[in-house]
Amino acid sequence: MIIDAHLHLWEKQSGCVNGKPVFALSGGKSDFGGAIRQMMPPYMLDGSNTVEMLIANMDYARVSGCVVTQEYIDGNQDAYLLECRKKYPERIKICCLYEEKEIDDKWIEQFDGIKICAGRLKDQNLLHHKDIFEKADKLNKFISIDMADGELQVGDMEKLIEMHPNLRIAIGHFGMVTVEGWEKQIALAKHKNVYIESGGITWLFHKEFYPYPSAVKAIRKAIEICGVEKLMWGSDYPRTMTAITYGMSKDFIEKSTALSDEEKKKILGENAKGFYGFPELEVPEKIINMVE
Figure 1: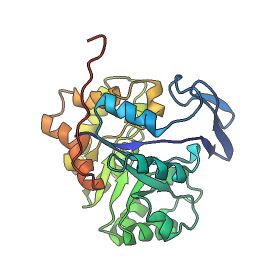
Figure 2: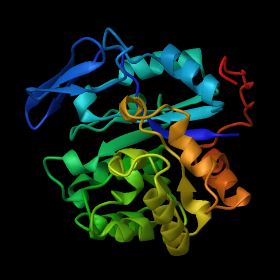
Figure 3: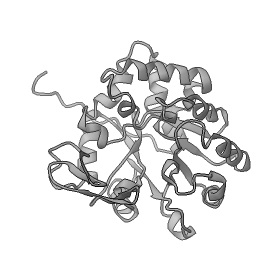
């Protein structure tokens, strides 16, 4: 069973970066704060990144389940994600988006977790956001957090983990692995309920490209630091699919000779199943390609 611990969905992109709007154009492109960027594969013609597209990609890549996180640059997708999970309740876990304002407990209760884009917070002192960690702990929700680069927020996170030892926390982007100090973020997973997910790791090593040998070396280093039981695969779909296929985002792990079969099994699904509470899911049937 393979589980993707970090991806994105939106019905309509309406976000913001550095105070400038982000919105979809045509052919998978977006206006990214005044600059044109290829945000999605070009066949995503109308800017919609729907759950139906995702499930088709998951089925083709034989991915059983996924966790949908969020990003400010896409805009708040809470309402759409609730609709998505209704359609695929067993295969999808969803996060509501923390936007530096009070979130009602009844709203949070509808979601599986809370996404914090900590590197984009106006106030990057995480202790000033302790209320959302308290809410997640009280309501038994997980926190999905993309931390600021390097060690900037590690000390604050250590204190929050000590305050909430039973709170499940997934640190994204593999600790921003290409930035100095990334190992400090990985070391947070020495705590019982803190895990690391690799959403965006292919983006971070995009200059090297597939099969990302340096990314595999980083995974081996992380195994030394916190143990393979704390690592989870994530794709950062659909943005990383502008360079590679969805299947390639996991194949570089699945086909690596530097990881054992048992390590691959844990990273690609077993660890996420336990952390997020997925049921036992079927592996989608393999469909033979025309070129095979």
